[in-house]
Length: 329
Image (cartoon, rainbow, N blue to C red; front, side):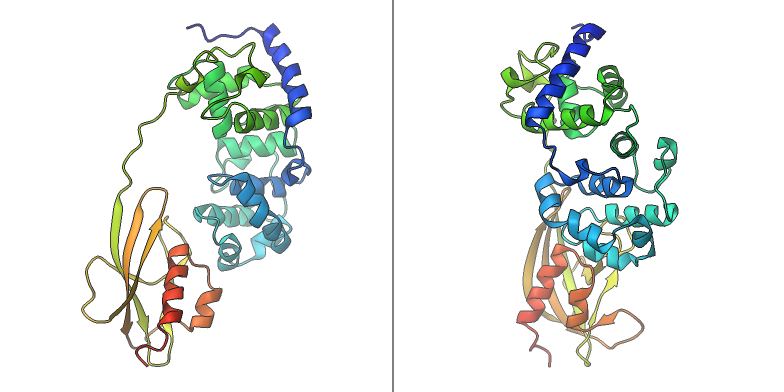
Protein backbone atom coordinates (compact mmCIF):
# COMPACT_ATOMS: atom_id res chain seq x y z
CA UNK A 1 0.00 0.00 0.00
CA UNK A 2 1.23 3.48 -0.89
CA UNK A 3 1.54 5.35 2.42
CA UNK A 4 2.42 8.75 0.99
CA UNK A 5 0.09 11.73 1.37
CA UNK A 6 0.56 14.87 -0.68
CA UNK A 7 0.63 18.38 0.78
CA UNK A 8 -2.76 19.55 -0.55
CA UNK A 9 -4.86 17.01 1.39
CA UNK A 10 -2.61 17.50 4.42
CA UNK A 11 -3.44 21.22 4.43
CA UNK A 12 -7.14 20.37 4.24
CA UNK A 13 -6.64 17.97 7.16
CA UNK A 14 -4.97 20.74 9.18
CA UNK A 15 -8.01 22.99 8.72
CA UNK A 16 -10.44 20.25 9.65
CA UNK A 17 -8.35 19.25 12.67
CA UNK A 18 -8.28 22.85 13.93
CA UNK A 19 -12.05 23.12 13.62
CA UNK A 20 -12.55 19.79 15.37
CA UNK A 21 -10.20 20.77 18.22
CA UNK A 22 -11.94 24.12 18.67
CA UNK A 23 -15.26 22.31 19.05
CA UNK A 24 -14.29 19.13 20.91
CA UNK A 25 -10.73 19.42 22.29
CA UNK A 26 -9.92 19.25 26.00
CA UNK A 27 -8.78 22.87 26.00
CA UNK A 28 -9.57 23.41 29.68
CA UNK A 29 -6.79 21.12 30.93
CA UNK A 30 -4.59 23.32 33.16
CA UNK A 31 -1.30 22.41 31.49
CA UNK A 32 -2.78 23.62 28.20
CA UNK A 33 -3.41 27.05 29.66
CA UNK A 34 0.10 27.96 30.74
CA UNK A 35 3.34 28.92 29.04
CA UNK A 36 5.42 27.89 32.07
CA UNK A 37 7.85 25.19 30.85
CA UNK A 38 8.26 23.84 34.39
CA UNK A 39 4.51 23.27 34.88
CA UNK A 40 4.27 21.69 31.43
CA UNK A 41 7.30 19.52 32.21
CA UNK A 42 5.69 18.30 35.44
CA UNK A 43 2.46 17.46 33.61
CA UNK A 44 4.29 15.60 30.85
CA UNK A 45 6.20 13.46 33.34
CA UNK A 46 3.07 12.73 35.38
CA UNK A 47 1.10 11.77 32.28
CA UNK A 48 3.62 9.11 31.33
CA UNK A 49 1.91 5.78 32.13
CA UNK A 50 -0.88 7.59 34.02
CA UNK A 51 -4.36 8.63 32.93
CA UNK A 52 -5.29 12.30 32.62
CA UNK A 53 -8.11 12.02 35.18
CA UNK A 54 -5.78 10.60 37.84
CA UNK A 55 -3.16 13.31 37.33
CA UNK A 56 -5.74 16.08 37.26
CA UNK A 57 -7.78 14.93 40.26
CA UNK A 58 -5.01 14.02 42.69
CA UNK A 59 -1.49 15.08 41.78
CA UNK A 60 -0.91 18.01 39.42
CA UNK A 61 -2.12 20.91 41.59
CA UNK A 62 -0.88 19.53 44.96
CA UNK A 63 2.57 18.89 43.50
CA UNK A 64 2.86 22.40 42.02
CA UNK A 65 1.56 23.91 45.25
CA UNK A 66 4.28 22.12 47.19
CA UNK A 67 6.99 22.78 44.58
CA UNK A 68 5.77 25.87 42.65
CA UNK A 69 9.00 26.47 40.75
CA UNK A 70 11.84 24.40 39.39
CA UNK A 71 14.04 26.12 41.96
CA UNK A 72 11.75 24.96 44.79
CA UNK A 73 11.84 21.40 43.46
CA UNK A 74 15.64 21.50 43.21
CA UNK A 75 15.90 22.68 46.84
CA UNK A 76 13.70 19.88 48.17
CA UNK A 77 14.94 16.58 49.60
CA UNK A 78 14.33 13.46 47.54
CA UNK A 79 12.10 11.91 50.20
CA UNK A 80 9.90 15.04 50.10
CA UNK A 81 9.51 14.68 46.34
CA UNK A 82 8.74 10.97 46.64
CA UNK A 83 6.17 11.66 49.35
CA UNK A 84 4.40 14.13 47.05
CA UNK A 85 4.52 11.52 44.27
CA UNK A 86 3.25 8.71 46.51
CA UNK A 87 0.53 6.65 44.84
CA UNK A 88 1.29 7.87 41.33
CA UNK A 89 3.60 4.92 40.64
CA UNK A 90 6.66 4.56 38.41
CA UNK A 91 8.73 6.36 41.03
CA UNK A 92 11.81 6.64 38.84
CA UNK A 93 9.91 9.48 37.14
CA UNK A 94 9.95 11.47 40.38
CA UNK A 95 13.63 10.71 40.99
CA UNK A 96 14.53 11.85 37.47
CA UNK A 97 12.31 14.93 37.81
CA UNK A 98 14.14 15.90 40.99
CA UNK A 99 17.58 15.30 39.48
CA UNK A 100 16.68 17.28 36.37
CA UNK A 101 15.48 20.19 38.51
CA UNK A 102 18.80 20.24 40.34
CA UNK A 103 20.59 20.22 36.99
CA UNK A 104 18.51 23.14 35.72
CA UNK A 105 18.61 25.10 39.00
CA UNK A 106 16.61 28.21 38.04
CA UNK A 107 15.50 27.87 34.42
CA UNK A 108 14.29 25.08 32.18
CA UNK A 109 16.25 24.93 28.89
CA UNK A 110 14.74 25.99 25.55
CA UNK A 111 16.80 23.82 23.20
CA UNK A 112 15.64 20.25 22.62
CA UNK A 113 19.18 18.91 22.70
CA UNK A 114 19.64 20.44 26.16
CA UNK A 115 16.34 18.99 27.35
CA UNK A 116 17.15 15.42 26.32
CA UNK A 117 20.43 15.64 28.25
CA UNK A 118 18.41 15.86 31.47
CA UNK A 119 17.68 12.68 33.49
CA UNK A 120 14.50 10.96 32.33
CA UNK A 121 13.74 13.38 29.50
CA UNK A 122 13.32 11.56 26.19
CA UNK A 123 12.55 12.82 22.73
CA UNK A 124 8.78 12.94 23.18
CA UNK A 125 8.91 14.83 26.49
CA UNK A 126 11.39 17.31 25.03
CA UNK A 127 9.25 17.82 21.93
CA UNK A 128 6.13 18.32 24.04
CA UNK A 129 7.79 21.02 26.15
CA UNK A 130 9.24 22.65 23.03
CA UNK A 131 5.86 22.69 21.27
CA UNK A 132 3.67 23.62 24.23
CA UNK A 133 5.88 26.01 26.21
CA UNK A 134 7.98 27.52 23.43
CA UNK A 135 5.70 26.95 20.39
CA UNK A 136 8.51 25.29 18.44
CA UNK A 137 7.42 23.46 15.23
CA UNK A 138 8.05 19.88 16.37
CA UNK A 139 5.79 16.84 16.57
CA UNK A 140 4.76 15.00 19.74
CA UNK A 141 4.69 11.20 19.88
CA UNK A 142 2.67 9.71 22.74
CA UNK A 143 0.54 6.55 22.73
CA UNK A 144 -2.59 8.11 21.25
CA UNK A 145 -0.64 9.85 18.49
CA UNK A 146 1.11 6.58 17.62
CA UNK A 147 -2.25 4.95 17.04
CA UNK A 148 -3.55 7.86 14.94
CA UNK A 149 -0.43 7.89 12.75
CA UNK A 150 -0.46 4.11 12.36
CA UNK A 151 -4.02 4.23 11.06
CA UNK A 152 -3.65 7.30 8.85
CA UNK A 153 -0.62 5.78 7.12
CA UNK A 154 -1.83 2.14 7.43
CA UNK A 155 1.23 0.99 9.37
CA UNK A 156 0.87 -2.46 10.94
CA UNK A 157 4.19 -2.70 12.77
CA UNK A 158 5.84 0.71 12.55
CA UNK A 159 9.23 1.30 14.14
CA UNK A 160 10.21 4.47 15.97
CA UNK A 161 12.02 6.03 13.02
CA UNK A 162 9.04 5.44 10.74
CA UNK A 163 6.58 6.96 13.18
CA UNK A 164 8.69 10.05 13.73
CA UNK A 165 9.09 10.46 9.97
CA UNK A 166 5.30 10.30 9.47
CA UNK A 167 4.74 12.66 12.39
CA UNK A 168 7.03 15.23 10.77
CA UNK A 169 5.23 14.80 7.44
CA UNK A 170 1.83 15.52 8.97
CA UNK A 171 2.91 18.31 11.35
CA UNK A 172 1.25 21.72 11.10
CA UNK A 173 4.38 23.81 11.58
CA UNK A 174 2.39 27.05 11.77
CA UNK A 175 0.28 25.85 14.71
CA UNK A 176 2.38 23.30 16.64
CA UNK A 177 0.57 23.87 19.96
CA UNK A 178 -3.00 23.30 18.78
CA UNK A 179 -1.97 20.65 16.26
CA UNK A 180 -0.19 18.43 18.78
CA UNK A 181 -2.86 18.85 21.43
CA UNK A 182 -5.51 18.03 18.82
CA UNK A 183 -3.67 14.91 17.68
CA UNK A 184 -3.53 13.62 21.25
CA UNK A 185 -7.22 14.35 21.78
CA UNK A 186 -8.08 12.75 18.45
CA UNK A 187 -6.52 9.51 19.65
CA UNK A 188 -8.11 9.78 23.10
CA UNK A 189 -11.63 10.68 21.99
CA UNK A 190 -12.19 9.53 18.39
CA UNK A 191 -9.45 7.26 17.06
CA UNK A 192 -9.71 5.04 20.13
CA UNK A 193 -8.29 1.55 20.38
CA UNK A 194 -11.62 -0.27 20.12
CA UNK A 195 -14.60 0.90 18.05
CA UNK A 196 -13.09 4.13 16.68
CA UNK A 197 -15.55 6.81 15.56
CA UNK A 198 -14.29 7.05 12.00
CA UNK A 199 -17.26 9.02 10.56
CA UNK A 200 -16.53 11.82 13.09
CA UNK A 201 -12.79 11.92 12.41
CA UNK A 202 -11.28 15.01 10.76
CA UNK A 203 -8.59 12.73 9.29
CA UNK A 204 -11.10 10.54 7.45
CA UNK A 205 -10.24 11.95 3.99
CA UNK A 206 -6.55 11.05 4.29
CA UNK A 207 -6.77 7.94 6.49
CA UNK A 208 -5.53 4.87 4.62
CA UNK A 209 -6.50 2.49 7.41
CA UNK A 210 -10.13 3.53 8.00
CA UNK A 211 -11.53 0.46 6.22
CA UNK A 212 -10.10 -1.79 8.95
CA UNK A 213 -8.78 0.47 11.75
CA UNK A 214 -8.36 -2.42 14.18
CA UNK A 215 -5.59 -3.74 11.94
CA UNK A 216 -3.40 -0.69 12.56
CA UNK A 217 -1.21 -1.00 14.45
CA UNK A 218 -1.20 -4.78 14.72
CA UNK A 219 -2.14 -5.89 18.25
CA UNK A 220 0.82 -7.03 20.32
CA UNK A 221 0.71 -10.47 21.85
CA UNK A 222 0.22 -10.24 25.59
CA UNK A 223 2.96 -11.79 27.67
CA UNK A 224 1.99 -13.68 30.81
CA UNK A 225 2.64 -11.67 33.95
CA UNK A 226 5.02 -13.56 36.26
CA UNK A 227 4.33 -13.96 39.98
CA UNK A 228 7.11 -13.17 42.44
CA UNK A 229 6.67 -14.83 45.81
CA UNK A 230 8.44 -13.21 48.75
CA UNK A 231 8.65 -13.27 52.51
CA UNK A 232 8.75 -9.74 53.91
CA UNK A 233 10.16 -9.45 57.40
CA UNK A 234 9.38 -6.46 59.58
CA UNK A 235 12.05 -6.22 62.24
CA UNK A 236 10.87 -4.69 65.52
CA UNK A 237 13.17 -3.62 68.33
CA UNK A 238 12.55 -3.78 72.06
CA UNK A 239 12.13 0.00 71.94
CA UNK A 240 9.16 -0.39 69.57
CA UNK A 241 10.89 0.78 66.39
CA UNK A 242 10.84 -0.85 62.96
CA UNK A 243 13.64 -1.30 60.45
CA UNK A 244 13.15 0.15 56.96
CA UNK A 245 15.59 1.59 54.43
CA UNK A 246 15.25 3.30 51.03
CA UNK A 247 15.59 1.15 47.93
CA UNK A 248 18.71 1.64 45.83
CA UNK A 249 17.82 -0.04 42.52
CA UNK A 250 15.68 1.19 39.62
CA UNK A 251 12.53 -0.45 40.96
CA UNK A 252 10.74 1.91 43.40
CA UNK A 253 14.00 3.82 43.78
CA UNK A 254 14.18 5.86 46.98
CA UNK A 255 11.04 4.40 48.58
CA UNK A 256 11.43 2.83 52.01
CA UNK A 257 10.95 -0.92 52.34
CA UNK A 258 11.27 -3.75 54.84
CA UNK A 259 13.55 -6.79 54.62
CA UNK A 260 12.71 -9.18 51.78
CA UNK A 261 13.58 -12.89 51.77
CA UNK A 262 13.08 -15.63 49.23
CA UNK A 263 12.59 -18.24 51.96
CA UNK A 264 10.60 -18.48 55.17
CA UNK A 265 12.49 -16.59 57.91
CA UNK A 266 14.01 -18.74 60.68
CA UNK A 267 12.07 -16.84 63.34
CA UNK A 268 9.12 -14.51 63.60
CA UNK A 269 5.33 -14.48 63.54
CA UNK A 270 3.29 -14.33 60.38
CA UNK A 271 0.94 -11.33 60.55
CA UNK A 272 -0.65 -11.50 57.11
CA UNK A 273 -0.33 -11.72 53.34
CA UNK A 274 -0.24 -9.00 50.68
CA UNK A 275 -0.76 -9.01 46.93
CA UNK A 276 0.27 -6.17 44.65
CA UNK A 277 0.00 -5.93 40.87
CA UNK A 278 2.83 -4.08 39.11
CA UNK A 279 3.20 -3.45 35.39
CA UNK A 280 5.63 -6.31 34.83
CA UNK A 281 4.93 -8.75 37.68
CA UNK A 282 2.58 -9.63 40.53
CA UNK A 283 3.90 -9.65 44.09
CA UNK A 284 2.60 -12.31 46.47
CA UNK A 285 4.18 -11.97 49.91
CA UNK A 286 3.74 -13.36 53.39
CA UNK A 287 4.50 -10.72 56.02
CA UNK A 288 6.36 -11.62 59.20
CA UNK A 289 7.07 -9.73 62.40
CA UNK A 290 10.37 -10.56 64.12
CA UNK A 291 12.37 -9.26 67.08
CA UNK A 292 15.75 -7.61 66.46
CA UNK A 293 18.26 -5.39 68.20
CA UNK A 294 18.69 -1.81 67.04
CA UNK A 295 22.09 -1.39 65.39
CA UNK A 296 23.00 1.45 63.06
CA UNK A 297 20.51 3.57 61.15
CA UNK A 298 17.16 2.69 59.64
CA UNK A 299 14.98 2.37 62.74
CA UNK A 300 11.68 4.27 62.86
CA UNK A 301 8.57 4.48 64.98
CA UNK A 302 5.29 3.56 63.36
CA UNK A 303 4.36 7.25 63.32
CA UNK A 304 7.61 8.09 61.53
CA UNK A 305 7.08 5.27 59.02
CA UNK A 306 3.73 6.71 58.03
CA UNK A 307 5.45 9.96 57.01
CA UNK A 308 8.14 8.28 54.90
CA UNK A 309 7.68 7.70 51.15
CA UNK A 310 6.66 4.07 50.69
CA UNK A 311 5.03 2.01 47.95
CA UNK A 312 1.45 0.73 48.09
CA UNK A 313 2.78 -2.69 49.14
CA UNK A 314 4.44 -1.16 52.20
CA UNK A 315 1.26 0.78 52.94
CA UNK A 316 -0.56 -2.54 53.13
CA UNK A 317 2.12 -3.81 55.49
CA UNK A 318 1.72 -0.73 57.69
CA UNK A 319 -1.97 -1.60 57.91
CA UNK A 320 -1.05 -5.11 59.05
CA UNK A 321 1.32 -3.65 61.65
CA UNK A 322 -1.37 -1.42 63.08
CA UNK A 323 -3.67 -4.40 63.51
CA UNK A 324 -0.96 -6.43 65.17
CA UNK A 325 0.93 -3.77 67.12
CA UNK A 326 0.22 -5.52 70.43
CA UNK A 327 2.29 -8.52 69.35
CA UNK A 328 5.81 -9.10 70.68
CA UNK A 329 5.37 -6.64 73.55
